Image (cartoon, rainbow, N blue to C red; front, side, top):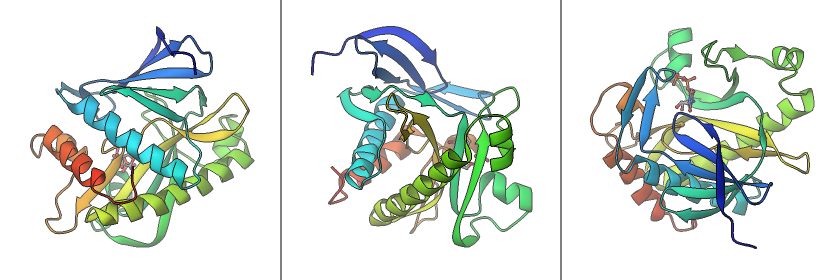
Length: 243
Ligand code: UDP
């Protein structure tokens, strides 16, 4: 592979910057030392946060690829930077839940961490102005956000991701409460997993202490976030078959 060189800033999100490179099919992702919540209303700079998430996401995406789940990850460049396949992101957040929390708990007024008999799957439409509303398949098709086939593919892949993530976190003595993933369409017109998987986008509960080991620490002001994310990375690095 010829050496990949970072070029222009294409998009700056809440936690990552995306740059073009000298290869039109490859993007350069920079994980920022920034954390936001409540649609960007709460925002803080935190040294070490970008590096930790960059490393966690790289380990998880590599593992998912090893388990047959195609994704955009190519390689980690250095502590805060990685290369990914260029995709056109489908503007949906695909959520899978194993226990009630967050918006589900609030919407249906159920007990915190009520265990579901089978995973609950939801889609949200990515729109800061609309505050990421819930969206169903018919609405997504009507808005031409995704086809029926793509919705079915995203649902099936998200459930496979859930199965593997549950296994990994179980080895880390952690319950996977819920998580969010995003998908994109690559240059071969294939739908693949994209974005990141980290404690920014998962709810994780320590099985012994019942404490949150994810962004809820920041959302709820429960203490320092980076040591918690480092704890996740440390446990992940010890999982036998995650490399
Ligand atoms: N989530 C995310 N980005 C968002 C909204 C949610 O990564 O913009 C994740 C969140 O961390 C949790 C899961 O998706 O793991 C379900 O979130 P929920 O719908 O409960 O929304 P919240 O109450 O967190 O806004």
